[in-house]
Image (cartoon, rainbow, N blue to C red; front, side, top):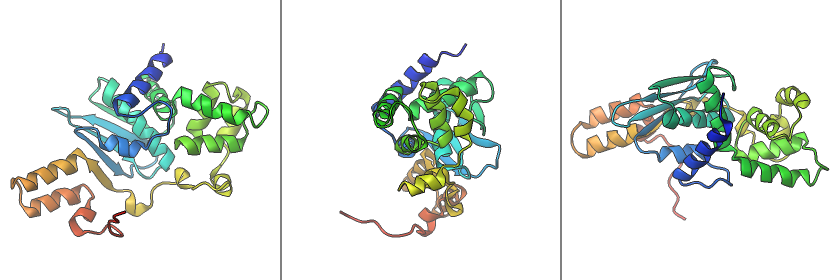
Length: 251
């Protein structure tokens, strides 16, 4: 039997370990880039895989995310892979697209991801504040406000609100099948959460791999040509050719 209370505790402890509280939304992409010896690769993987985690030697690990999926799903997949990184003894895991499917470990990772992105206390506080305005029942606009606040997909928000008792089981499937992008835009929100990254940004690598390449060139261990080869293999032509748009602004 899955101990969901234990998964909630693990998610809260990891947030604190990474320097975050359990009341606020997080930028999980920036947060994970600071994890020592972790490389994060964004790559379009088709329609069946949302991400994977590979543990190497000496603490070196790689998380790959399917960058052709929506931004909200990528955030969830990254949190899902953090469970495998910290709490799964297997050296490699591959996450299928549908949430809540797969073996027990995958179901645990999904639950952990939801708790990590939407801590129960914070979700309850947000939901209760919206309930006060609508006579005890959340409407679709409230759900959109919640998913935008936490930066999660519509599916993740609906499932968690159902788990917390804010959405009836009878309404679950109906709400899961609602397309909310246009409605979110009409409410003044960005629709980025419901879209994949632009194709030109779907290939990129951050973290330990880039840092190690930089150390090797600075120590004179590899040539400039080899350094550029390593960066290009990691889809970082912006570091080789300076193709990043715009310049640095100093406030």
